[in-house]
Amino acid sequence: KPPIMAVGKNKKLGKKRKGGNKRVDPFMKKEWYDVKAPGVFPIRQIGKTIANKSAGNKLARDTLLNRVFTVSLGDLKPDGEDDAFRKFQLKVEEVQGTQFLSNFYG
Image (cartoon, rainbow, N blue to C red; front, side):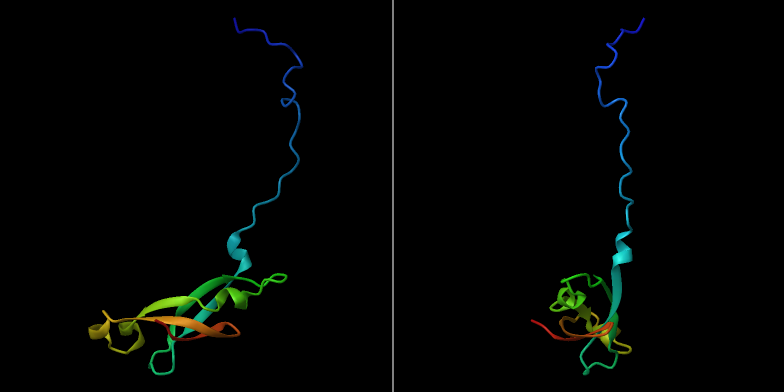
């Protein structure tokens, strides 16, 4: 026989929780940006990166400036498989719409 418990002692048992906030997908608050290499390279498109959208006083531009990307020289030259071991660091210096313009860093 199970033990008999006192009725009305567990106060949390009968209370229902209020409806909690729905989880919002974090990627709904983000935007994609193109990263461009300096003009000395024949292939300027490096890739894409993601950042939070501007909201209130927090501008997306501020979170993007001074980001550093490491890029292989083989990715910046056509038929550059021989130079793939050389790497550059490029730092974002300007944001134009959805494009970053980068310059050499380090």
